[in-house]
Length: 138
Image (tube, rainbow, N blue to C red; front, side, top):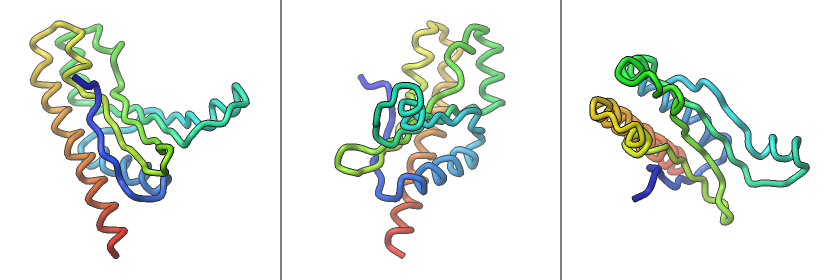
């Protein structure tokens, strides 16, 4: 079983990142951190790497519920959403599967929260795909 949910999309990398952030916001997530892996690896190691961004997404209401049920859940937050370019130039948007993430906590009360986050991530990915497809058709 995989640990992410993902979509391959057509579009300029920066546009995909911006569209992803907007779609996350529409689903109630804020992006707490935005790590540019390509720039970091170049700066710290002098290594070239594909375009790759890690967006640390958090829905405050759902995070509060989860932390109330499982205080150690903070070690798994924020939920990461990644945007990266493949070798053939396709852009992938991928989110951690919250069911897999909270499964390691072994706390059944987190199941409904994981389902809610999963559903919101699925809608986010669908929105990104739909908006970019509409933009390319225009």
